[in-house]
Amino acid sequence: MKVLMFGWEFPPFKSGGLGTACYDLTKGLSRQGIKVTFVMPKAPEGAEAEFVNLLGTNNYLKNVKIRTVDSPLLAYNTSESYADYMRRYKILGTKGDVAYGEDLHSEVQRFSEIAKVIAEQEGHDVIHAHDWMAYRAGINAKKVSGKPLVCHIHATEFDRTGNNPNYHISHKEFEGLKEADLVIANSNYTKQNIINQYMIDPKKIKVVHWGIDPENPHYQGDYTSKMSDHDKIVLFLGRVTLQKGPDYFLQTAKKVLAYVPNTKFVVAGSGDMLAWMIEKSAEMEITNNMVFTGFLKGKEVHDAYKMADLFVMPSVSEPFGLTAIESIKNGTPVILSKNSGASEVLTNVLKVDFWDIDEMTNKIVGSLKYRNLYNELRDNSLVEADNFNLDVPAKKVIDAYNHAISYAGGVS
Image (cartoon, rainbow, N blue to C red):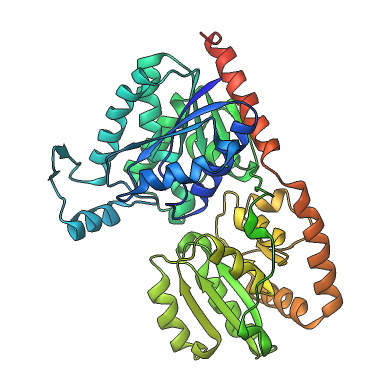
């Protein structure tokens, strides 16, 4: 089977969980003998060499081909971030012979038009599009080849904006989900959201929970920080934006310090609420107990998990939450928002409503002060981490492909 896949980030150039998810999915599919052509906006200069090196060192990715499209589209783009990117790099209008879109939505449209050409060039049996920026590309590819379209939803515009969606983006999501022959949702939580928000037929939605790559070398070995000599470490890792609940993390930190004053709260990530968090922590007079690392990647991410005593994910709306599984695989217990897909598949974690600051405080304080509770949580969750791999989700995605192909009349 040959898959033409459209996305907008892929390691080593990524800004969030989708890049990791796409890499792991293509690796899992490759292990099953599926050939994937992954199409994405062009990464920074020299990225092609990086991709060649990345793919060439891993036999499991021998069936994966990367095609880049010259485009300034970036992961988690908004209209404002796209305009700011264009201003900063002074490429508004043209760059060489390429005429980029004047705004985010016209550039997404340009990317989708290029998809028609790629669909003619690349043989495929099914089209797989990830999230809203790639949906129109998938629709256009289907118009050219007549092959079935599978749209993968990792997070809705309602998740990202706290139920204040940008109309243009939510409409593109709606179009993609409606046009798709089959929809893959990364959790039952996400499935219910798209049923509620977009009235998608439940019968055409297949849930595939994410796994992790147990062969990732970053899971091996240990890492400690000098902070651990005197302090407990509680970690927030992810985009520092409304969806991830950084404000609740900050409020909880203030309360925890009344009971466990020798605690450092590490915020690893970047986003539009980072400056607010820094200013607010000063206003709350807890600056000395806060550490802001900025964006981390690769080994740095796993080192952050390893040095922490607890990983807290207070997300307001978390379609899945791959970081929770990564944390327990690194040996760090998790306190998890009930508004997350990961809470559907993880048992040996502590779960809490994101808005319940008192209960979140109780769970953090209890875990840090009572060693027996902490050890049981850590040991059991580490065993549970062995249940997650790349093969199970890949096989479920292949089942989805076969269902979509069968519906469309078979492989040519």
